[in-house]
Image 1 (cartoon, rainbow, N blue to C red):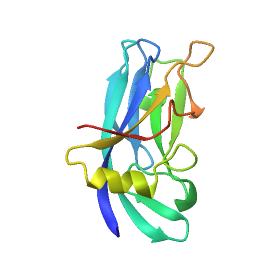
Image 2 (image 1 turned 45 degrees about the vertical axis):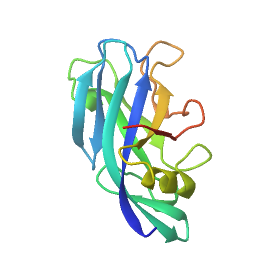
Image 3 (image 1 turned 60 degrees about the vertical axis):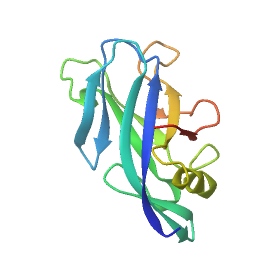
Length: 148
């Protein structure tokens, strides 16, 4: 594998109701903005992945953030998601790499599964009832292969 585009989905599980959520694209562009009803929210997007680098996989594209060895994507909430009346200005940092991250084996399996994507899920509500933020822990086994 050299470089290819892969489809990803992040699902925010049981977020607090009436909170704005959006994917961050680049430094400050918001994508797929939505308001939570308390039901799960999913964001679908694509990244490019390059293998054969010293750090392993390198994730590229407008949604990826951070240095190549620790790439992640942001899910923004409250004012950070465009809601000027929100009491929160938060971002959840969703890891693409690490123990629960995307592996070369997952990318290879994805390439053999037309229409599939990789999905990560995280708890959308913190212990205090507010939106989860900062570096979030992925649920289950982290990134998994799911049908389209």
